[in-house]
Amino acid sequence: MLFRLLLFCFIGIQLASAASPSLVIIDAGHGGKDSGGTGNGLVEKQLTLDTALRLQSKLTRVGMKSILLRDADFFIELDDRVALANRYRGRDAVLVSIHYNAVGGSEPHGVETFFWRPDATALAARIQRNVALQAGLMNIAINRRRLRLTRNPQIPAVLVEGGYLTNPSEAKRLAQAKTRDAIAQGICDGILELRERGAAGIPRVPEVASPLSRPTDPKDGGRRIRI
Image (tube, rainbow, N blue to C red; front, side, top):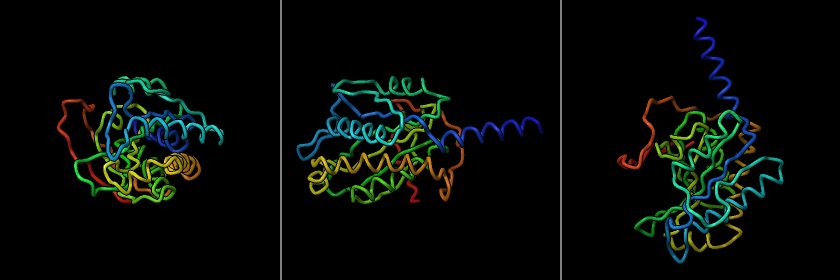
C-alpha cells in the first residue's frame, strides 16, 4: 500500500513537472555537415536554426527561460543532443526539436509533431494545434514514434516538423520569414498553453515499455493521433 502511494506521488510530480515547464531546451535540427532535407531551393538546417532563434526570442519576451543546443551552423550528434538535454532532468524542462519535412514526392504537406513519452502528449498536442493555426498550414496529427529525440531524453520531448520543403506551394511559404516566425510563435503559444492548462482535455497515452531508440532500429511510421 505504501509503495502504491509513493508511486502515485512520484507520477503526480512527473505530471506536474510536464504540465508547467519553466525551461525549454531548443534543438535546431541538423547543422554543419548535416544539411537535413532539401527542396525547392530550401535547406532544412538553415530553416531550423532560423526558427529556433525566433522561438528563443519569443520565449524570452514572455519571461520563459530557454537554452539553444546550437546557435550557429555546426553539427551535433543525436545522442549528444539527448545527453545535453538530460543535463536538465529534474528542472521542469522540456525539449523541443525543430525540423522541416522532405520526401520523394511533391504532394505531401502540413505540420506534424512527434512524441513518445506519455508526459509529452499534451505538449505535442498543444504545439501541433498552435503551429498549424498560426502558420495556416494543414494540421496532420501528433505521432507517437520512438525516435532518439522523443524516446531517449529523460525529460518530456517533442519533434516538430514545420512543413514540407518538397511541396512547391508550402516551400514558397516556408521561404518567407513571416511563415517561420508564425511557426515559432505557434510553438511558443503551445508551451504557454501547456503552462496555463496542463493536459486538460487531452487523453494521455499509456506507458509502453520499450528500449532506447538506436540508429540501427527499423523505421516505423509511428501511430498518428488526432486530438
